[in-house]
Length: 141
Image (cartoon, rainbow, N blue to C red):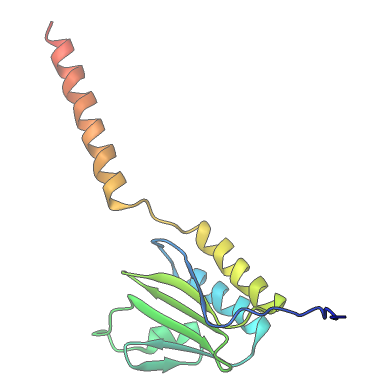
C-alpha cells in the first residue's frame, strides 16, 4: 500500500514583473521606496555608481549625473526594482505572501504612472493631421 503525502510546492528562481514605460517624479520614487521599506528596512537605491540612503539624497548628486536609471534592492535580495528608460520591472526572488504584496503595491503605483508609448503618440499625431487636412479641404468647397 502506498501513502500519499501532501507536498508544498515553492517556486524556484526570480519572478520578473514588467511595469511598462513609466514617467516618475521624485515623490513617486519615494512612495515606492516607502512601500519596500515597510517590508524590509534595509533598502539600497543605486544610480550610476552612487548608493543613496534615501530619495532625498538625489539632490546631492553632481549635476553631471542624469537621473534616468535607478536600482532599488533590499538587503536580503528578495526584491529588486529596476527603473530606467529601457526597462521598468520588479524582480521578486521569494514567493511568500508579504513579498507578493509588496510587488502588487509597486505594480499598482506604477500603473498610474504609465506613459503612452511613442508609437501611439505618432499614430494620434498622424490622425490629428489627417483630420485637420480633411477639415481644410472641406472648407475650400
